[in-house]
Amino acid sequence: MPNTHRTLTPEQIIRPEILALSAYHVPPATDMIKLDAMENPYPLPESLRNTVAQLAARAPINRYPDASATELKATLRQALGIEDEMEILLGNGSDEIIQIIAMAAARPDAVLLSVEPAFVMFRMIATFTQMRYVGVPLHQDFSLDLPAMLEAIAKHEPAVIFLAYPNNPTGNLFDAAAIVSIIQAAPGIVVIDEAYHAFADVSFMHRLSKYPNLLVMRTLSKLGLAGLRLGLLIGRSEWLHEFEKVRLPYNVGIMTQVIADEVLQQADVLLEQAQTIKTERAKMLAYLETIDGMTVFPSDANFILFRINAASQIFQALKQRRILIKKLDGTHPLLENCLRVTVGTPEENVQFCTTLNTIITEITS
Ligand SMILES: *Cc1c(COP(=O)(O)O)cnc(C)c1O
Image 1: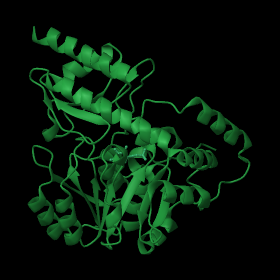
Image 2: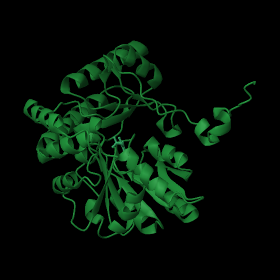
Image 3: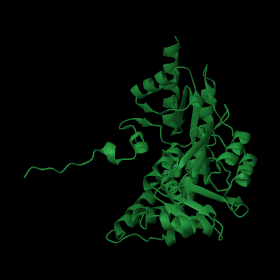
Image 4: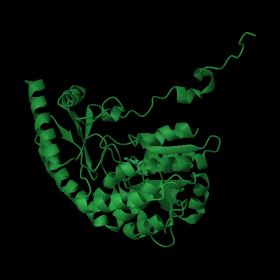
């Protein structure tokens, strides 16, 4: 008998909005000075790494992990100073938490609102979950356009607003009073994404008890544990109780639970590294500002955004010399000729700064 089984093509099965996407691109970085992904460049101290090795050796990986991660949550509560009245939800990175929130809120026609330019996952996850995405442009200096935000909130009545504080890819903190106005005007929830909190010293955490529609998100990724994948959402039980239903039971593995728990007991190590990164950030900012034709944007994060003529050419030339940063030119009109560099070790930063200077001299001579 002839085989008459005919299957549909991906174009016939996959949703058109997914077909239209390009996958989140992570460029290869072997043998590169890697300054593109806001990672902490420092390893853990030797003694702590040995402790981690022993914990890993003892971990019962034949068993499922603790689905409620009770011990880890207690340690996080202590280390981050989370109030007793607030609940914690854990994610496999905060990316997953964005997805959990969106999945739970994705009623037909529900809106997810953020600013532009912002963290690209806000828009992508809105698409994955069939939420309608609204991006309100920032001002030229990347500050919040509060009247435009309030207008968009009134018009679209967003179910969820995401604001990164400090913002990625721009590095700045939005005006706290403007954010409060947004929280007060929003009919839905406002998630303040504090991925870069360790480099900023300010937070909305202490306002959680004041605003019933406020949630705060953190991650260990930028703090030095990007490979573990651990993010957390902090807020009232009335919200987190619902999001918990959408979370897959074993989303945080046992290795992440035991290692994060141990490292957070000694959080000073990470905080000292963050302090070093802040000192290096100041040095890099000062240096970059001396380069002719350069616009350097202020940063409260572990990266620096700058604008320079022929940015794409400079990006390529850096790459040829094995220095990988992030090209933002072409991703949004406000980011024309913009590049973003993560603050690395002192040696990496010097290498970046001097190579950049050489390239600019070559191009302009
Ligand atoms: C890096 C980043 C995240 C994602 O962090 P993970 O916890 O590693 O998933 C979330 N929000 C912003 C603004 C970021 O820059």
